[in-house]
Length: 180
Image (tube, rainbow, N blue to C red; front, side):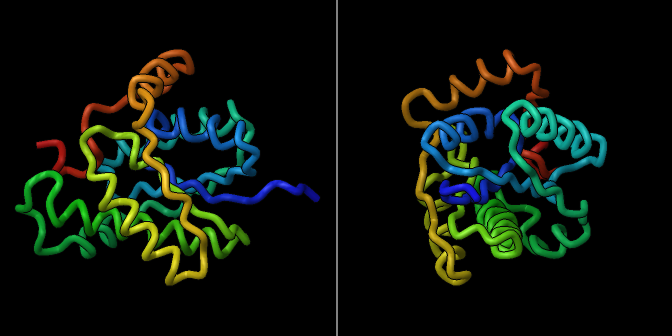
């Protein structure tokens, strides 16, 4: 049995995980990935991102969970927020949906620690994301690993790592509203 602490890493996409995964492993964590993709549209885009996460997981030798693709459930979760601007209340609700699913997965697999790759993006509100993560972790009896992955050129490192690993790198967050 490993003496490493087990951490569930919510993965929004492979490029955004290309820095957190090796960094966490180097720190001594046992990392288990969780790719939530029900917010990603269209389905073909979801499949491209899913395959990229599988490549990343294989490269670093981590186990990764892939819940069912349930876009109807995601649309129901953000109903009424379709007209919100990018970065607005719809995104906040989406972060909640993703991290709630991640916390459930963490509990299912006995992870006491929980983190997300969402904070690598220069386009996202890292304080909001970490606040949501801390709240959800607390509710679920988990320890939130508060990280801002974009620090120390994290985003630029992810661009380079994605290129080196041959990962598909998307040009929008994921949902059909962010694509407009």
